[in-house]
Image 1 (cartoon, rainbow, N blue to C red):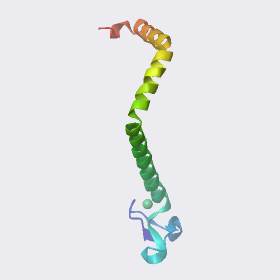
Image 2 (cartoon, rainbow, N blue to C red; image 1 turned 90 degrees about the vertical axis):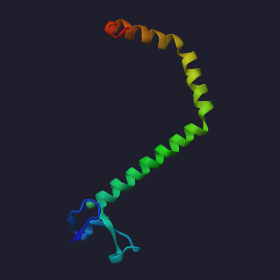
Image 3 (cartoon, rainbow, N blue to C red; image 1 turned 180 degrees about the vertical axis):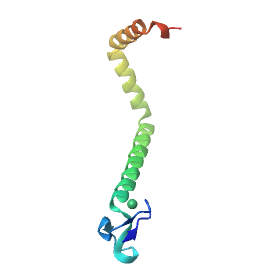
Image 4 (tube, rainbow, N blue to C red; image 1 turned 60 degrees about the vertical axis):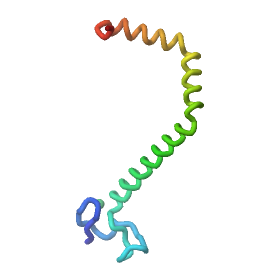
Length: 92
Ligand SMILES: [Zn+2]
């Protein structure tokens, strides 16, 4: 049995992935934790990438937004009008 560094639970060694760089040749955290942590990391990285992309393409994003608005002006206006009609208490 081996205690997972992440969830602090004692689990069978088969619950750990192999890692030759670690003492004992196994990961310090169990497979589910490892998956969770690496997913979080991936999500964060993806988010960072998206943020960076948006920063790098600010003008493009703005232009697209404007284009979308112009193309869908009537639709957006109609939707807003309907929303106002459906939610009269929200006006003013
Ligand atoms: Zn764990």
